[in-house]
Image (cartoon, rainbow, N blue to C red):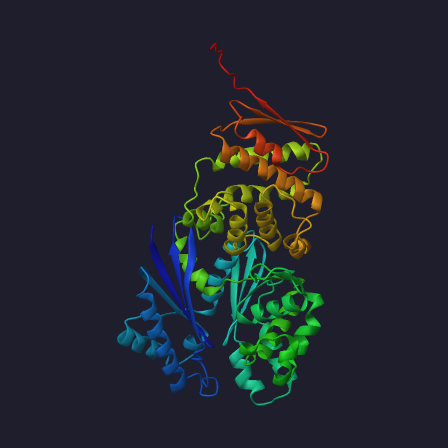
Length: 497
C-alpha cells in the first residue's frame, strides 16, 4: 500500500495541510505539513459575520499553494473541512462555491459538534486514555466532547473563540472582566454532563500553554503529545497570561508567534477548566485534521483501532520492513521471563507492556546498521513511537531498547530521563530480560525455550544447540547477584577418527 490522503483544515485563524501515507491496514504516518495564518475571519465579527476581502484573498492563495503541494505526493484523496469562520459567515457558502470553481476543491463546512467529534476521534485513538472532556479552542468557537469508556458520548460547540474575543473585547481595550462575564455566560449553555476531572487539550491555545509549562519545569522530554499536568498548580499562571499586557508575554514563556491570540485563548481555557471541574490536563498533539483522516481511515472499524493494535508500532514495523515472523515468539518468551521474575518478586507488575513494546520494536534498528542497532532502535522509538502511550511508557520502552544489555545508569542519557523512569533495579531487570530474548532470537535459529529461576540463578533450557550464543549470553550485564545457567539439550553424535 503506497497511497496518501491529504487533509486541509480551514480555521478562523489558520489553514493547514497535512498529508498522511498509509502503509498498511492500521499503519500510517505524516509525510507533509504546511500552515498559513490566513485569518479568514479577520474583521468578520464586526461586519455581521461576513468574510472580508483581505481574509478571502489570503485563504485563496493558501489553498492554491496547498493543492500545488499535493501534486508532489501520491495523493489519491483530498479531504477539506472548514470550521466556524465559514459556517458563521453569510457569504461562507459563496466562498465555497467560488473555491470549487477556481481551484476544483470541495470544501465541507462542518458544524461545531462535528468539529468536536473529529477532535475526539483523534484523542480516543491516539492518546492513552478512555475518559475525559476534549476542549478545542478555535478562533470562532470552542468545541467540546465527552468521552466515556473510549466512546464519544456527547459533543457541544460554544460561540467563544480567540478571534471573536479579540475583536469584541481585547482590541477595544475593554475591561477583562467584561470578557470573563461573556465567556462564563456562554459556558452556562454547556450540558450538565460535561463535568470531568480529566481534560484533553486540543488546538493551539492548549499546546502553547503546555509548551510553556514544559519550559518552566525543565521537563526532560520534548514531545508535546500526551504531556500532562495538574490544573491547580498552573491556574495562577494562566490568569497572569490572560491579564498580561502584550509586551509582557515574552516573560511568561510565550512564543512570539502566539502573542496575537494567546491572552484570549488562555482566558477561555482558564474559565472552561473551572467550569468542568478539571484537575488534570492531558495535551493532545492531534486534533481535527487527524480526526478527519481517521474518520475515513477507520470507517470499517467503528472509528477505532483494535485493542491489540498500536498505530505507531504498526507504522514503524511497516516502514522499516520488520514484521518478523518470530516477533510473536520473542514476545511470548519475554513474557515468560517477566512472569518468572514477577513470581519471585524481583520486578513490579506495571511494566510488562513496555517490555513487550520494546521486544516488538527490537529489530527495527537493523534497517540502519547491524552494529549498535540498540542505539538506532532507541532513536526510532523516541521519534516515532508517539501514539496511544504516556511519556513514561514511551521513554521506558526506548530506554529498554537503548541499554543493549549494558549498564547506562552512570551516563547522561539515563540521568536526562530519570524523572520519567522507574527505579534503577526495575530497569536493570527489564533490560536483562530484553537482552536475553533478543540475543536468543538474533543469534540462534531456535524458536522455543524454557526458563527456571531458583533464588538468584536463571536457567535457560534450549531444545537444540546454544553453542554459538552461549558466550554472548554470558556477556549480558545482570542485576546484582544474578547468575545465569545454560542447559543445551543438543547431543553431539559419536565419532571415531
